[in-house]
Image (cartoon, rainbow, N blue to C red; front, side, top):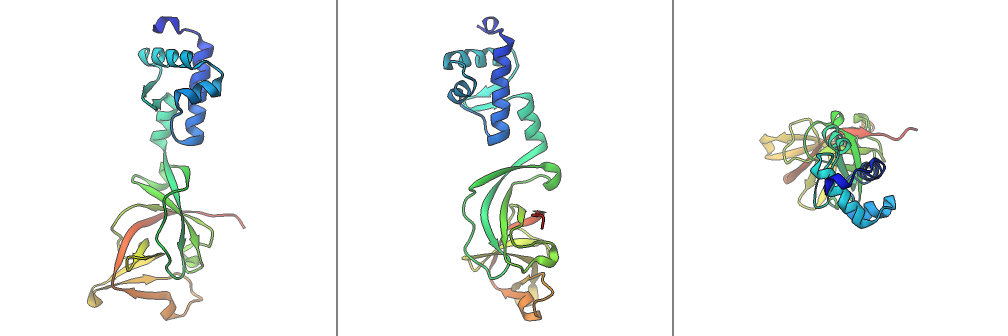
Amino acid sequence: MAYRCNDTVTKRKIKSYIDSYICDNYQSPSMREIAMGTGISLATVQRYMNAMRTLGELEYKRRDIRTELSEKIDRDRVVVGKCGRVSCGAPREPMVEADEFFSVPKKWVGEGTFYILEADGDSMVDAGIDCGDLVIVRQQSYAANGDIAVVLVDGGETTLKRFYREPSMRAFRLHAENSSYGGEMRDRIVKNAEIQGVAVKVVKNLK
C-alpha cells in the first residue's frame, strides 16, 4: 500500500538513482538495476515504485520510467546516435548502425530525427568541416539546392557534399568545398543520388 512506503530517504535514493541512470544512459533502468544501484532490496524497490506511481511522484510502464528530471531532459534535449564515418572525399560504403549515443540540446538542431557521423577527409574544409569533426545530420530524404547532404551514390557509396540538382542533365551535382581542389575535382556529376540526411551542426575538436 502507498501509505506504508513513506520513508523519504528511500524515495529519494530511488528517484536519484533513476535520474542519474537516465542522464548517463538515455534510457530508464530496470527494477533490478535500481535495486543493485541503491542497495535496496528488489521487493522494496517494486513496492516503493508502485506507491510513488499511485501518489503521482513518478510514472512508469514496464521499463519506461518518467520523473520530473527525465521529462525536462526529453523536452530540452534529443538523443543522437553516432553511425560511424562519412567520406569528405571519395565516396565509400554506406553507414552502419549507431554504436554510441549522445544527448544534445534541441536548440542546436531543432525538431526531427538525427544521427551523428564523423567526417573523414578534407573536401569540405571551406564549409567548416574538418577531418574528425562530428557532423549532426537531420534524417530526411530531401535536400534543397545548396544543402550539405549525406548522399548515397549509385546505391553503394556514401559521401558528404554540397548538393545541387541539374535538371538539364537529369543528374545531380555534388560539390566539394575545398578551394585547393581544381575545378573538376570540386564537382561530381552523378545520375543516381539518394539523400540520407542534411547536415545541421558541426561539433569540432580544438586544435
